[in-house]
Image (cartoon, rainbow, N blue to C red; front, side):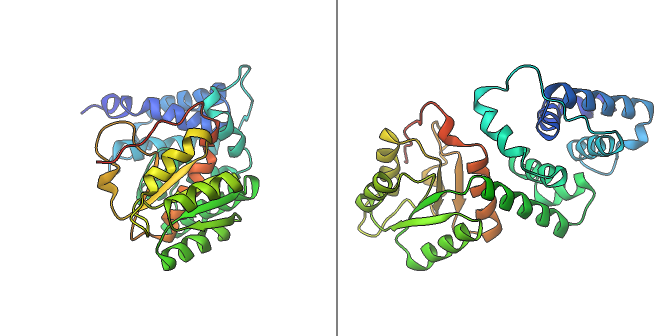
Length: 271
């Protein structure tokens, strides 16, 4: 496979990343162009030992770090669905922004994201944690947890509060969940599927979304009931048993993209 073939398939995603990192379509595209020019001038800057996408993003960040960063704002407004994300990005330092975007938006594994940034795994996690804390400070919110297992509920509450949010209610049944959201009007909901009295967290969420738009993260031991390959499906899903760092990253991601800004929430169906 030629160098051009190895690079071309990943360019649309690199442009997305570049625009988010720099805060400008104009600047992002200019840095992507500079990256391609550097690769053409000296192919050795593009690692042959890394996967092509990792090598391309890594080359881009090296070019970005070697040129004065022009964080010029574009003349026209970003698309409505990205306006909240763009505002939230502005609070992050450049390196934390890069780490967060690589993991949460570009969906690199932590190992590949560390390779892209040419840092150790521990440093990547520190930057992702920094991003999560910065986002949380900017958009700290009230949270309702729908979970019938007390120990799991307490673990989730601890993780949520560690990010600077406030848990206003832990609901154990569908009815409790619906009533809690009506009263508290939270900025985030974490929901299990199967609840204490045999009721459904999924039904609770669908009822909530009929009248109130709020980002929802499903935390479940039964992901197959939600991930069926059909639409609509949940945007944010955590599988039990969960890793604390994964929970914190997903919470930050859900709030980062401000799902509440979307015009409508589709009804979710389980099989």
